[in-house]
Length: 586
Image (cartoon, rainbow, N blue to C red; front, side, top):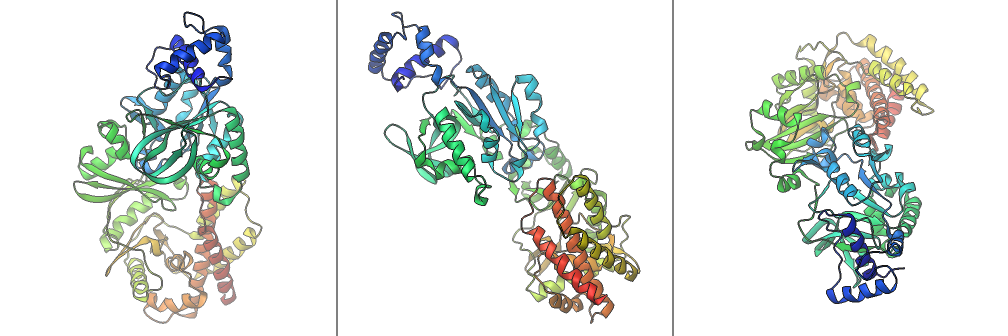
């Protein structure tokens, strides 16, 4: 067993024989005095000859420290790099003339590490060419959409030994990799303000004693980590024990390390500034590569510039917006004006008619219901709208807001606008049901009886509708922008000709919290008079029908890897409760 100084001198000697490239990892951290004494020790052990060359015995002494492989984690969707990450994974961004992940692979190979595995998920097909071009291995993790990167690491559990673990969104100005490592470590950089980072405390030997968030004037974790075989075994046991806990799903593997740092022996490996860079936001990229935004291959940026008659240099303050239930959005500024770019979400091409949406958006603009809309591509589904600051969504407990919203629905329904497209909640729900069954999705035990009841009510409802009208079809609180006395109705992607009661159904079923009695009480706000008995049962049936449709839609989204959280249960309850009430009245 070598001590640290012996290892560093011996490894540096071997590396200098094998490699000529500039390598930040190959520099021995040892004083001249210690180097001389250590060299004599290695000669006495027979690991160096009198000329200072490494002997076969010296090479054999390094075998336990030889790096087995590297794992690059590249499964995440990089939402913070929207909208560019809508087009390609961030590991595929070209920075200073090189694709990020290709540069990392080359640096690993230059350090003598040939066994490289990339764990992919989001846009996984973008990585497949690397197998043939660079001789790497690919692992596809299906859990990237529902769990954080501890799942990516765990998917490669059988590969962890003496292993580098790397993030695909990093750039190293020098080669930080080495074929021999003495002990497990986290790479670290120093910062006066490390807010949002994993800050590190260490002892006199650089063993990490504490990991915490948001430190000041401290080192923080950034760059590749190295696991030796003992550490890999211990850490994998921890991940295995924690994996099934609900709280674990959102954790990075760094969080699990932080939670168990007292059980593990891992060291900090500091690097000077200017060597390790990580790109979490577009501002990080543009600060490092000033030409990145101008040179990046992006149809999204081209579309924005064409629509707004601006140059890329006019686009600033690009920020991701929390993803909606269907789509992905980005806030940006162009020539001082704030806009929202909407990108269609995964799988929406199966359930959203973008041409119908484009028609409805133009109609809504003409009716004064939505003045935010600027342009939509009816083929691809991307959209640009004005961003209205200082807005909140509709308050279901505010009767004035509810009345105004329902009158907006009335304005739409009585406008006489005729869309060439129609939307029937029952028919569309059955189409999605067929998709789910073709996917062998495990439908719940009570799904068929509920669907049969909904079908019976939908049939009766159709006989009561004299003529379809233009409907919003996603008419609920979050799709209203409220600012003072102003109210706008946005998100028209399901709008088409249909049953006007289904807009009331959406309003109630989608999170209003209204009971059957409260729903009946709000009908006069829509009709401007007391509702008839037929209208009452029809509207209650519409709440059940719409709730059922969104319940089915939510299962489809789950099947596509987009967790729906509590919404699925909200819509299920609306379908059950209101279809039962309507059935009694029918």
